Length: 216
Image (cartoon, rainbow, N blue to C red; front, side, top):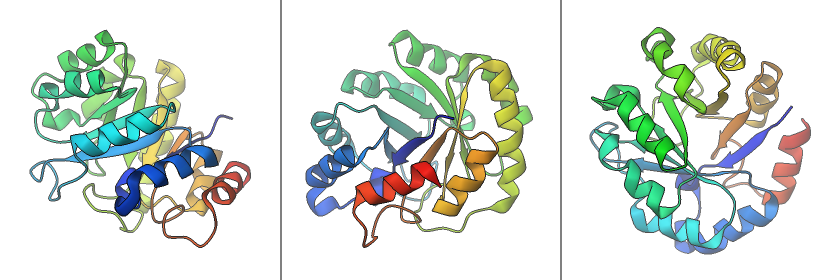
């Protein structure tokens, strides 16, 4: 089964983001994951436009953008034009969520929704036929280094089932350790957003880490 490894660039080395991006690219990154936060929808500020543009400029790999912001519909065209391949929005942050998803797709990009741990599947079922990805937050969004929330596992399993019905891929984001990659791959998760639990701040080279994550 396909297994997408997606380093979360919020955890990268900001003293030399270009060098770190190139190293991750050469190590076998599938998708670069970019968190954009506004300090309102989540209690933190994330990466900025300049960070996105730098990563986009030094890799030909897909780059996604996770808009943890209020009114993401105001910004999806901007990020599409900057070269985002996949754009995730939080449905509860958008007053016209179906329109925003349509705009993403009209720009030739993949549309994704991100579900907070407390957001029930029932609240977004109508959106599932018009998205390409559903990303389940397995921590409360906004900060790196949190503990994995085990109660999200049932949501993940149900979305995998619904994904086979509607044709979207299930991604997980938050405290994704190698053990979680192994466990969640078995239930049908396609993509893994990887931060300090598995990739960054380790003694091993990125390629060795990625090679291991593909086979465990």
